[in-house]
Image 1 (cartoon, rainbow, N blue to C red):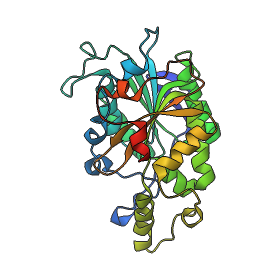
Image 2 (image 1 turned 30 degrees about the horizontal axis):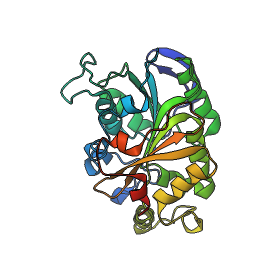
Image 3 (image 1 turned 180 degrees about the vertical axis):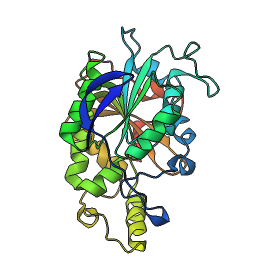
Length: 292
């Protein structure tokens, strides 16, 4: 259905209100809309891999407005909040931004296809002035342009400074096929300067399909016809870089559940290329190690 939506009290336009997506028995969630996702993959397992001063490293020059971030597939918002706290240098016990150590203002727009999860995120958010939530199917091109364009126009911008795509690519791939995955990555590359992405490995695809089969349901529509397979971190890197749209800046290592954290930069952005070791502040991770 179409509903009016607002960002921090600002009425924008009309957009799709998202879907009420059920989670099937046995923990199967065909769109990745797990209701207790953060219990199984805690946010700390991701944010600890990122340098605390990452925003200052990526955006060293002063600017008039805040940095803008887009979190695609935010679920119920726990990781979004953890990323926000970590990137602006706000301790877990603090809700005031006065003592932020990073010296950067950050506004996040977080979206998910599941309207129920978005409503829960809104109710629990400790930073309603800086973090906005919206129900959105990111693969619906007309709706996403209306919603994202409305949000960006509030700041006089046409692109985000940084996008987060954390354990989302598999669900797009399974539900929209190879072409859907390529379209998603191409779109995100066009909408941001930096893209931080955490692809699910191929073993997760098999596990997701197996959970559906145990319930007597068919595999995902595209699972058996996918030609993009195998080392998904490498394949996604190839898609993002082969047409010259982005370059791989750094691999921040892997989570304890074996998912790589990859940072890409738009080649069209007028920013200096940063050395991976400079960003990692001595952490022994490199682009070369990612390919070994």
